[in-house]
Length: 178
Image (spheres, rainbow, N blue to C red):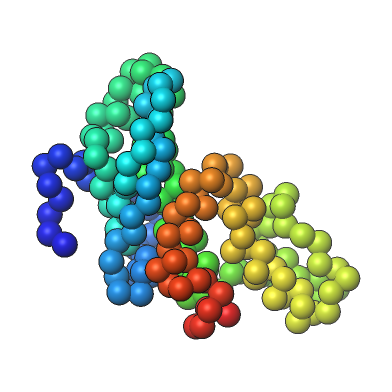
């Protein structure tokens, strides 16, 4: 894929670190069809392309939309939220979701296992064996529920992007991810 056409805005969100994990096995970008709500009007459906490096291709100028929103133009359009919030969240968590990295866990002297980023949604695992606790904690940090609570973000949009990534990998529970 070459450079995007002139009618496609390219947005490079700020991401916390470099990512070595591709969105798809062949390194291709992922395309998501979203209902983009501009202002308070009806939503228009269009595709948004997400690249592994965090670039987002959208049919409208997201930088201009952000300026308009900051100048009091109403709520941010869905594409802007998707590009500025959802994509960085997914890229940040993708190595753990794809099991390229292990979640950071802590084991107390009493043998209780917890994720180091434990938040309100994290389940209590005291009734489980030590091995089951580790598996349960690692599985939980890959859930939409955990990402939603951790980032206080719309899990619908996160779910849409993760669904497309999952399709590219033939499901996130198939080898080598199980």
